[in-house]
Length: 254
Image 1 (cartoon, rainbow, N blue to C red):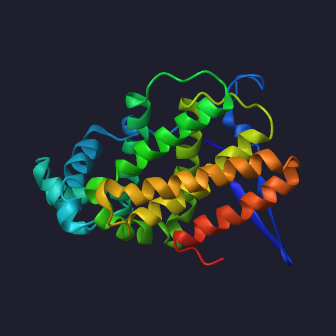
Image 2: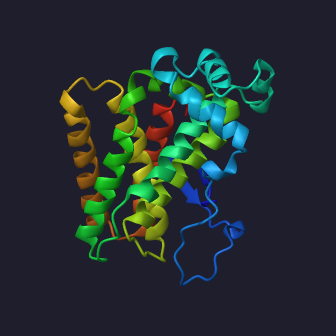
């Protein structure tokens, strides 16, 4: 799993400490930092996968609710008691959407581009936009999902999924950073994605054109900051505010 984000409030200053977790089991520091132990659809039992895949089809009509989950159980041909397979209730449905759509990126992404920063940034943009567009069928229900993700008992998993998505996008984009920029890029993209996702829930433009423009502005701003702020500590401080904004967008009181 990616290094967890720890936000420490110290007077007027906010410090973001992105820990390098030893449990990541890297083959070596010079290897890619990407973890191949990300959750995937194969993490579910066949019964869970069948039920959740069926239940997702009911989200547009019923939202991320017990009704959608119960309908999925019946569609998959299982008895109502099978709800016990999901002790976290409807959160299992939200997480399934996050996991399967992240997994879909790796299946559908084009080959990584050359390592020039401009080309890699373009690929990050394309992959981020691809992931946002995967929310189209359920975007009118996504604020319900954000409310579920913001519940205290789900915050850790919510942030972990956001970090895994950012890690996956940079990996697929061909990012080969092995220095502190590995962390700052992912923290920055996590904040950008979370805010773009929230913006999209209120976007009424054709094919979510305004969300695409919002994403472009945020990515451009992040690139300008990265090029003008050379000190890692200063950059981390800037990104801290972005991460806090992302947390607030998910309903976390900070």
